[in-house]
Image 1 (cartoon, rainbow, N blue to C red):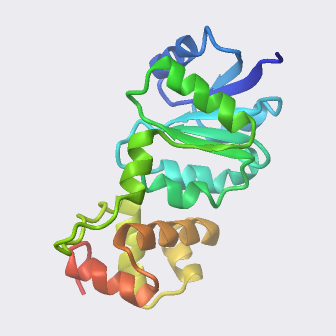
Image 2 (image 1 turned 90 degrees about the vertical axis):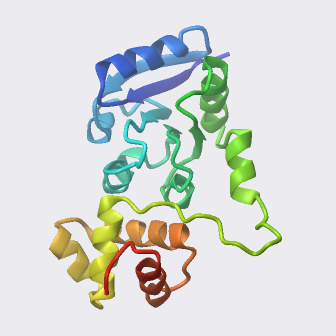
Length: 210
């Protein structure tokens, strides 16, 4: 069996070494390592990007993934993260296959996720699937909303002022493409279907002040 060619992306050399050791016994060939996604393009032969999110809130990672989506185009990606809202923007990237693995996952779980993503599949661990598909409680109480990242709060505040994506992008010095992804993530976290509803829900939950 031809081994899957993988590239490890993590800012910490120690974390990269740990991930490499977890894949040592699998049918995975680690063809390189990179500190950022921007550098992943230097290894176009990598079929799967294994990206470790070292910030529990995912701050900064979403933006980097979106801004470098051409580096991931046609490849597969396995994200090591505890942020379940990553589903909302991972599915929008031009990936062949992708998955989310918990930072606490054992080596065999990571290995299985890499193999599945390389074959164009979408993979989650069981607990994440259960949380995403769990029906609301019968008493009608809403589940606690996922916290917005600092960047998402900034975007929501600018949306509350009626600014379009282009002006939001200019104010925050990011691309319109990135703004769209942040808006999508905000909608998913707040359970909103429109900008007006997102602003109203954000204000009601104390995320922003009108």
